[in-house]
Image 1 (spheres, rainbow, N blue to C red):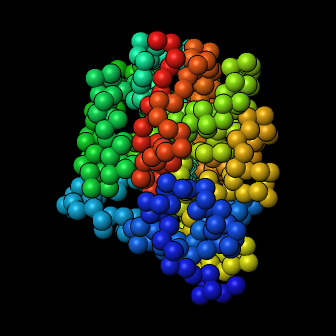
Image 2: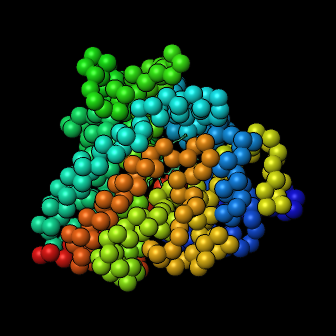
Image 3: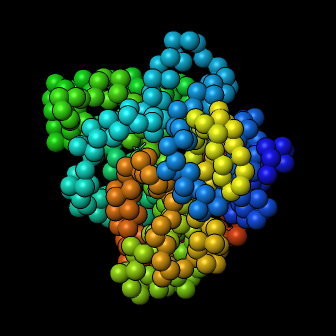
Length: 406
Ligand code: HEM
């Protein structure tokens, strides 16, 4: 297929697309393996929708994470003075936007501090935080599951893990929301966050603690260590990734469970099914919306489609996870299926660094919910939910529920 034939003017990522994500993907996937489309920011992207292509693309070294053109387009939409822009650009120079060898070096250093032992060490705190939030929920006849539980849980966990003081946690939520959802406010939010991070790093240098930030400051590899700007952008990445993803794992997952009462009942009867259920939640309706971007460093061919060098490739994670050639009857939410191999955490060298933490949080959250509130019900219509309009994340605007205790 030639480049011209692959082109379409169909504007993806518009309001209707976000509200009907899977139907939209099914249409595109069935039509052609790789399609050229225009985002609402006016970016032309090559959309990869099939599982095999998506998995291969995520691990393809010819597809770079450095993406100056995309940054330019995004920056052009953000009115701000030059100094601020430089500052914000610095924040975005984190490892998710890098290729080897820079990526390899940073990832090695961060893994020294953010390792399995540290995550496992958080288990009892996550249990406590989750139980505390559910105690408060039990007092209400109706609550927003996101406000009462799905948001505060990961925020508190990542803040404690890093050592962010309690008085600034609300600020963090406001900043990360602005960064993910509101391009007009994102510049200011990034500046405010970075200024706070500079102070926080100074404080940890003066008074080291047993937390991840101190671990990052002290991490060394062959006498190499993170520089000050690297530390700031790394912490920025961890905070944003740690805030805005797990909330949707819980929100989208509980939605799927309540829409499928037999699956909820199966979990209530056997909480041992929770780990498998969390994998199915990630596959079925994962937190990272449409997908993730790459940039062609040289011409590539996917699904028989030639993509020239210098183009933006958009790997549709949610689409790949619902490809019927990989997962039978993908639209069926089935916590007993083998969902392994889903791409909700990506694949290859950028595979989610927080996957172990996210899984642990998700499993504790779901287990606590089914054990504590076996009669949990949606307070509104389950057919009429509203999704947040975001380029990156796939999550609900709100999720009113009745815990069923009062
Ligand atoms: C990377 C998803 C939670 C930290 C990624 C990527 C995905 C992802 C898809 C790869 C993006 C790409 O290849 O372009 C998720 C999901 C989460 C989650 C679905 C929750 C359910 C977290 C948490 C943290 C985190 C809790 C940290 C505390 C990171 C980091 C990277 C990353 C640092 C970049 C890794 C690299 O470039 O080597 N995540 N994430 N994530 N994630 Fe997560």
